[in-house]
Length: 191
Image: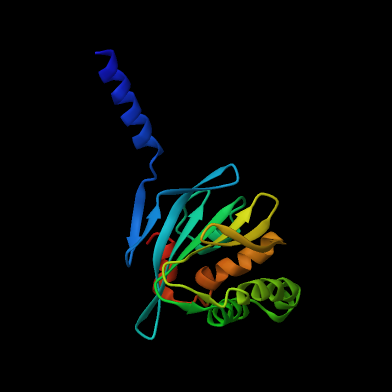
């Protein structure tokens, strides 16, 4: 009897420690939760970025509190995560250009002037990748202290970039007034 109870407790413990899959997008799985620093985040939504009929990447947005409002998602304080799973080989130059254009479309000249040195720093790090292979996982984390960390397949790249405004600028690529893709914005907001 004692052995059965211990076995049941071990199974219950292991089941509780296995991440729960909340969404699957084009074969890419997104867990229900993620942890950045000491903060547990919830999957707000996940969707597919496509371009010219090609599936480019699956993306999930993790926030401290779920919301269906883009302004609240961008402005929410605390750690956040964007998790991207590439669905094809993506050249670093193309990836960098897409992010840069997305930031430019969603910000005025004065805001862009403030963001430019950090965008240049971020772009330089991205370009060192050469090509991001199909199946790679790219994460953009807003860490405690308002630092943006870029990681590829779990390995941090470059130096963390300061400023919550920088991370918010990146989020606006997908959640801004002029998002990369309208239906993707809707999916990331859980609609």
